[in-house]
Image (cartoon, rainbow over all chains, first blue to last red; front, side, top):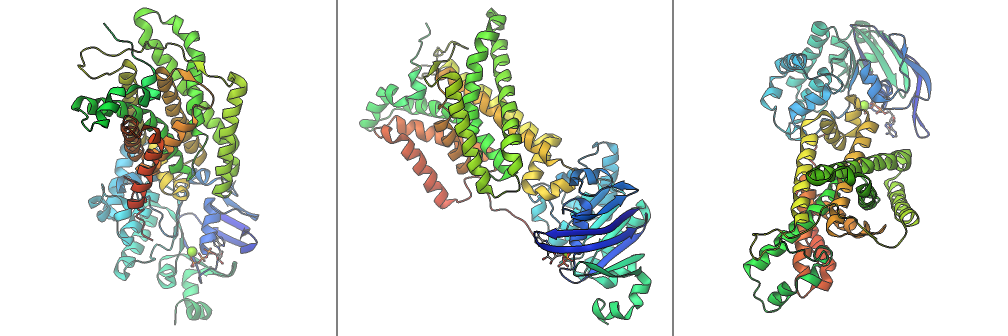
Length: 235
Length: 332
Ligand SMILES: Nc1ncnc2c1ncn2[C@@H]1O[C@H](COP(=O)(O)OP(=O)(O)OP(=O)(O)O)[C@@H](O)[C@H]1O
Ligand SMILES: [Mg+2]
């Protein structure tokens, strides 16, 4: 289980998170929704070690993660697909996937994982030797997810996987996220602008507003919540 | 009979190439002269390449120019100066080539260690500071090595011991090819092949390329950035150390300031090839070496460096990212 307890983050003198507390149960899908600048990405960055936590604590299965360097957090099985994908543009698709498995041995198991990922995203197999920078935005998103999967995380964080992707592909990507969660038993923490879809596939949701959590509930309950419906579901 | 040639040739081609000079004056450089200059130029370029690769690799991972790099080259030469009399007596007769390799590898290891220590003590604490701060620190480190070197080794030139006896090869017709040239080009080629293998085929090499592409993403993959950065400094410094020894074999007068000019030229070569691009650094270095040698053999020889740098400026006007550099492709 991942637990954030009263976590505060600031960029310089600007506070981005004013003490948020979140729990993610193993095997579940949890989503963070909120307007632009609410602090969703910052929350993920704090967990993965990219943003410095000023106060509060982050624990995973009882172990303290707060302010560990990013590479040590990945080693605990927590993987972060960052906002804007951040694929290695000059590396090939295959090399990107190898980087995902950087801390593992590239043996038979890597081959099996690769087959699994190519099964989910066949487009990546066709583009195996191509520089990642030449992929389309949607393909880069697939690669970013695939690259996180080759690292065999137990806990996967996805920051706006639907950003800039055609609606038809968004549905596919969400289906794949559910598939990964069910088939691999991977816990997923999802940040999404598309609150509708996110609440549809998740078990639990948190609503962030300017660095504070204003609502936390089961996703099905949040979808019925008038406040959420008006502000985030456009109904 | 082997002609022992003037060791001045490499350091001052303008003093040696009298024949070429006259040929050029009369506008009739022969094929032989041309090839002679080409050989000299390529082997000079080989030195620059070894140094240039260090600049470009460090730029790749940290996006700053390590101005102390040319001085690591100087330390390489002094390491050879110090190691040769200590190690070579253990490798008599036919063992001599093994001894040369041992001296070379030991000096490379020492320089690698020096590069790693410099990064750790001087640059790492400033990692999150503006690049200008780090750049000025690099100049400080450079001065420290130069004047620290003068303090330790004395300011006057030392004569590099005969690690190998330099002589011209026989059976090359009118061309003069020296053993040191062959060794310099051969060792450079071997080191370039090793480097290319490390960068393309090993996990650390992959991490280096990933880090230079996107450090944040590399950290998210579990890469310990400090390890890869140390490794990069070690690798680049080892190559510079090797260059220092090879240089000293053909220019046996070494002094603590000897790294400045080759350092600048190698930096120019790295920029010319496209900073951050490894094959680019090698291409740029050979180009600089060849231009410098040809100009040195012409009537413009006193403007050798000026012309070499003008070539840089002209090429950069047309290709601002360097010869092999390309504008970054990144979709957001
Ligand atoms: N590197 C930074 N330096 C300064 N301020 C930052 C930085 N990154 C984020 N912020 C600020 O922190 C706040 C939270 O940003 P964050 O990226 O977490 O928002 P978000 O909820 O992910 O928004 P979006 O939906 O637009 O991605 C914003 O006000 C933002 O301006
Ligand atoms: Mg965001």
